[in-house]
Image (tube, rainbow, N blue to C red; front, side):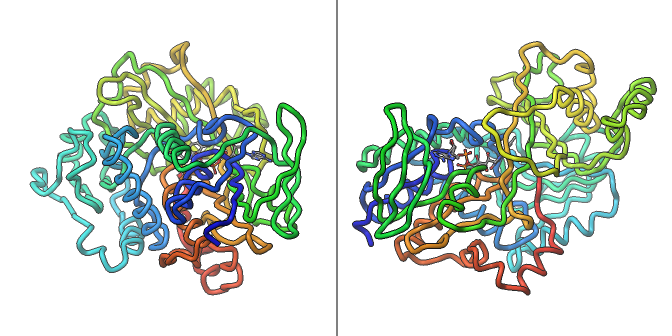
Length: 453
Ligand SMILES: Cc1cc2nc3c(=O)[nH]c(=O)nc-3n(C[C@H](O)[C@H](O)[C@H](O)COP(=O)(O)OP(=O)(O)OC[C@H]3O[C@@H](n4cnc5c(N)ncnc54)[C@H](O)[C@@H]3O)c2cc1C
C-alpha cells in the first residue's frame, strides 16, 4: 500500500505527527493534510505543553516514554528548536501515607520499578539529583520519592510548609508544541506533502474515499486511497461520516498565564501539582456569598486536587501558567471558547495553597493575563484511540485528552505502523477500537487511576 494517497484530517499536533511518521515509514509524501483553519490553531494552541511518564498503567508509561524518546530525537536533530526542558513533575501531598501513590508508580513501571524508584528520607539525600539546570540531557529516568520535610524545604522553599511528601517524576518537563508542529510540517513539505485549508463536509467510502471539501473558493470532491481521522474534538463527527460511532466525549478545561512580576514562583520550579483536595481560600464573606448562590455554591465546598503551576518562557522569562482540570461535565465542542470569567480567581486561590506567595495576586491578577481553554477529547478510561477505524483504509489518531502534545509523536508513529504494516508496539492492541471487546482489559481499566491532570 506504500503508493497509496492519504488524506489526514486535522492539522493539530496529532494529525501533523501522524503525517510526519507516515511519510517516514513509507518514504514518500503522497499525503494531503486538510484543516478548516491554519495548523496548530485549535486545541493544540491551548496545550500546557507539559510531558511526563507518570501513569499507573504500563501501556501509558511505555507509550509516553516512546513519545518522549521521539521528541528527544527531534530536540537533538533540530538543536533543541522545540525548547525541551526537564525539571520534572513535582506531585505534592500533605499526607504521610503515600502507599497508594507509590503503588501506582510501581505498577506503571512494571519490572523496572525497583530501578526507577528512589526513596529519600534524610535531609542530606545525596542521591537526589539537582534540578537547578533546565537541560533535558543527563537527567535520570524514574521517580524520586522525597519524604523529609527539611529536604523539601531546602529544595522547594516556596511550597506550603505542610507538604510532607513529593513524588518527583524526573522524565518530565515542557516543550514548544508549536515549534514541534512547524518542524514536522517543514519536513513534510520537503517530502512533497500538500496542505489545504478546507472543511471536510462528507466522506463516501467506495473504491477509496470520496471527500467533499469546502474551501474559500467553493466546494469540490477529491478521492484518496486512505483517510486518517485526526480531527481532535470533532473526531466523532468525522467517524460518523463513515458510519462509525466512537466512544468519546469532550470536556472543556481552562488555564491562565500571567507575568509573575512579584517573583512568586522561582524560575527553577518543576511543573508543580498539588494532589490534595481543598476548600478554596475565600474570605468568610466571599464563602457566605457563594453558599447563598445555587449556581456557585459548589465553589464553597470541597474541591478536587491536581491544581498545577509552572514557570513559562524559560529561566530568563517572567510568566507563569496555572491550571485546574476540575470540570468533568461533557459538553458539545465549539470553536469559540466557553471560558468561565470566575476561573482565573478560582485557579489562583487553588494554586496559592501549594505556593503561598501567589496570594499577592488575590483580587489583582495582572491586566495582561491570558485566560484560555480547550476541549479534552477522551474515552471514559482515558486511553487514546489509534489504528483502523471502520471501512478498510480508514484510520484514526484521536481521543488524546490532556496528553496529546506529549503523546503525539508515539501516536503518529503507531498509526503509521498500522497503515504501513510496520511492527506494532506492545501498547498497540490496547489503543485500538477492538479493546472494547476485551472484557478483562476494560474491567481492569475501570478500576485503574485514569491519570487525568
Ligand atoms: C487547556 C488544555 C491544556 C492541555 N495541556 C496539555 C499538556 O500540558 N500536555 C499535553 O501533552 N497535552 C495537553 N493538552 C492536550 C493537547 O492539547 C491535545 O490532546 C492535543 O492538542 C490534541 O491535538 P489534536 O491534533 O488531536 O487536536 P486539535 O489541535 O484540536 O486539531 C484538530 C484539528 O482538526 C480540525 N478539524 C476538525 N474537524 C474538521 C473538519 N470537518 N474539516 C477540517 N478540519 C477539521 C480542527 O480545525 C483542528 O485544527 C491540553 C489540552 C487543553 C485543552
